[in-house]
Length: 198
Length: 150
Image (tube, rainbow over all chains, first blue to last red; front, side, top):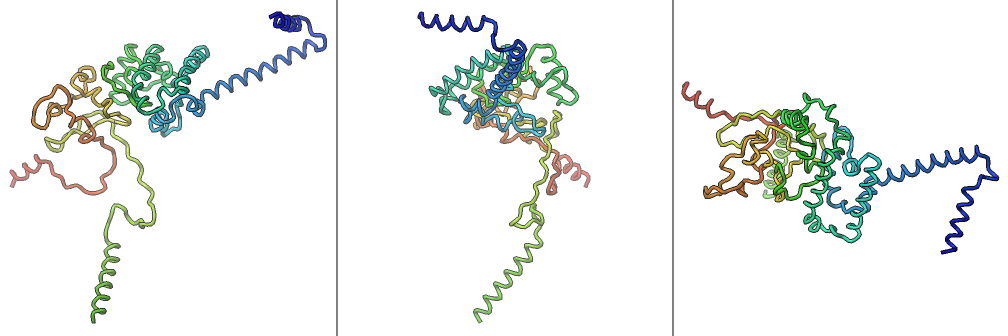
C-alpha cells in the first residue's frame, strides 16, 4: 500500500511541476495535435462498433434478425440508401449512444452463454425482445425512425391514400408514433396476440 | 424394305419437328433454348386504394394496395390487423366476409376459419403489366344483354 502511495506521489509531483526541458509552445501544440489524434481515433473506434460486421460478431443475429432484414426495403431498395443495425438500434445523440452501448453489453452476455443460440430458443424469446424495442421506440417518440423520416418534410400528396390519411391525422396530432403502426418492418413479428392494434 | 420405311418415317418426323419448332409461338419468343433472354421490367403494383369491380359475383376481391413484406404465418397475420372484425372500425378497411368464419360444414366459428387464414391463396395484388396473351372473358351481364337483344 505504501509502495502504491509512493508511485502515485511520484507521478503527481511530475505533473504538478512546471516543465524543465520542453517549451510551453511545444507542450500546448503537442497536446493539441495529440488531442486531435485521440479524438479522431476514439470516434473511428466508436464508428467501427456501429458496422454490421461488428454487430453480427457479438450479438446473436446473423442467422435470424440480420437475415430477416436483408429482404426488406430498409436493406435493399431502388435508391441504394441502407439503414443498418445502428441506424435504428443505436441513438445518434452521444450520451444516449453510450448508454445504449452499455445496455448492449448485456446482450453480448446472452451470446456468450447461448441464451438464444438456436432458432427454437430465439422464437421463444422473440416477443420479449421485440417488446423491449417497441417500448424503447415508443418512449422516445420513434426517434430512430425520425432521424431519417422527418414528419415536417413529408409530402402527403406523394403518399398513398391510406398512408396520408393516417399520417395527417393520428401522427400529426401526436396521438400515435411511428412504431405504433410500423411494427415488423425490418424483422419478422412475434406472436402478436394481445398487442394493441393487432 | 423395312429399313426404307423406318428411315422415311424418321425423316418425316424430324422434318415435321423442325418445321413445327419454327412456327410455334411461345412466350419465350425467338430466344434459343441455350440462351437467356433479357427479362422484362418488373411491373409496378397498383396502390390506389380504390375498390375494383368484380368480374363475377363469387370472385375474391383483388387487393388495391401494396402488400410487400406482409407477414401471414402462424405467429401473426398482417392483413387481419386492418381487415379483421375487431379492427375495421379504426382502420375503415372492408371486413373479411362472413364466409371466412365458416368451416367446411357451414358452421360459424368465433374467429377466422383456419382454411381461410392465408389471404394470399385467393386475394391478389394487381400490377400495371400488359397481358401477355389475349382474354376472351365476357361479363355475365354483357352476355345476358346480347342474348336478350337477339
